[in-house]
Image (cartoon, rainbow, N blue to C red; front, side):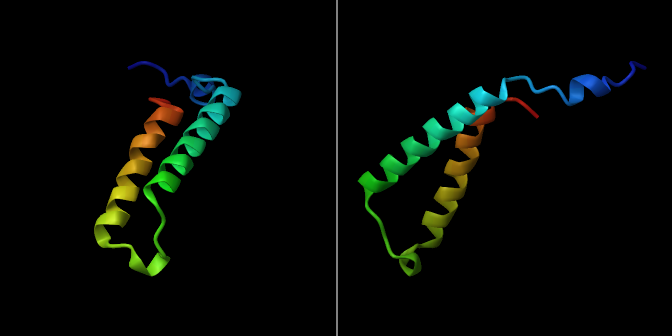
Length: 69
């Protein structure tokens, strides 16, 4: 059995500045995209819209942090 790498567990795979920059770029892209699609009042969202927003957030997480666990 291999020893667990405790030091490597706390060392990020990507530099924190790169993760922050990716998050800002993705956030701005999504904001522009949602503005172009139009906005609805909060009460007019259908369950499909909420589920779609949930799946978009999951997909965008991969573009921000990648395989970093």
